[in-house]
Length: 269
Image (cartoon, rainbow, N blue to C red):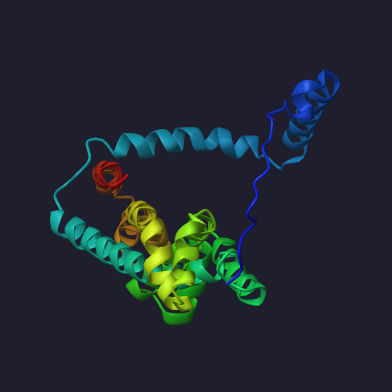
């Protein structure tokens, strides 16, 4: 087990160069302004199509009010599947993120293991869940399995990265005390490392569950199960009042889950 640097040098805060140097500061602003003008002037905006789309958007919003909640059974089925996908993916993702976080923490893993763990986390964070969902839909077919695999991979990347950083910031004195008693590597992890990151892990798990609930609605649009598929079908049938009812329920569910996860994190921390 690699020991982190014992000494920490004191540092004095200084203004960043782009704040302290006015020429550099105004030069950066000029570069940003030039880039914005260049980007807006070179991107292929179809202004005629945009102008034609505004009345169409008005008709869509007009057709969505008042929202229709008549097909409550279909809403309930879609949301139940989204909840199942989000909870299973969170459980699997958090469970798998723990060993990868240990491997990706430089103070408790040798360099080859560290590089492997970091590589896995980087790869799992490199792609948007929609892209991963498309790949899993092509691999395992339409349905909730593709959504569970997608959000599990997404959870490993997010939770694993933050847990690895938390492990790198633990109090090393507890580790040294365990090593002095002759404890092995896994005993040190269980009794000296994991208890220090447990509150953070629980908080991250709640946050990831909240994030997976939102993402389950998005990946469902590409066929990975959940309420997203129901929403896409409603738009495809021009059933805008039912689609807006689904959107309102999604907002309500996310607000409730955000409140619950925030309350749990406050109790833990």
